[in-house]
Length: 311
Ligand code: PMP
Image (cartoon, rainbow, N blue to C red; front, side, top):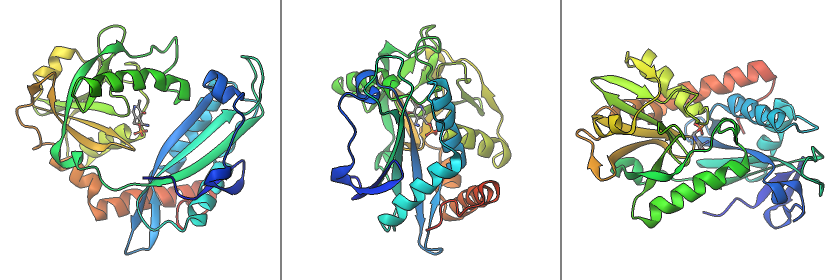
């Protein structure tokens, strides 16, 4: 689906067609940008857009800006204000995927650190049919980028050349996606989501030193699985062959939501959906949305003294 007609560029609401940066900016030349994908879930009853964990997304963006040594680190309040004005300018009344990018705007040499541009826009999103059917996945022949090369916990645009290459290869070979291994041969993550598996009733996920993005949805699943479902959750490094023996597995992320994996390298999971039905019901259920997203919104409003997602 196309991006909604109004975007926010450096604090100004502009038409999609006019949202441009220079072809020689550091963002284009060197991939010097950090970004976030953020979900807005429209709630019909409340007539409000609930933005999922907005403060966490904006803090992660600020972390990325610091690691890339940007001259200017935008405040959470400023970025939230740009995002909310863009949402309002589009009169959003449906689920959206919001993209925000903070990038090097100057035509400078490699080490240019500013000025910094900030852009955001939104794309309408309907639920993927794959949430029901699940996905067939292959181990990628591409290694995951390593922390001491291009840190995956920084959501830098350049990192995604790795994810893109892996995903393209998987799709070319007839799979829905890929699971990427670290340069140590351990399970890392998918091209746009984190990985979980179930074995003997325990939920396992690669720990944060497995060259993953420190996913906000992953943290939510861990919290819900432990608190609401009473499951034991273990974060540790995971071998490829352990996944073959898992009873169930799934991916999670802002864009992917909670997506069942039904086979890895054409080896099918024994019980593809039984466990997953539980956390996804928790995540998808209207009431859970209201309480989860409502909590985020209220916490945001409290912490940052603004509306935090309501239109
Ligand atoms: N890993 C990668 C590589 C991603 O791009 C994403 C999507 N942001 C995730 C994991 C999931 O992270 P989050 O739950 O914060 O969206």
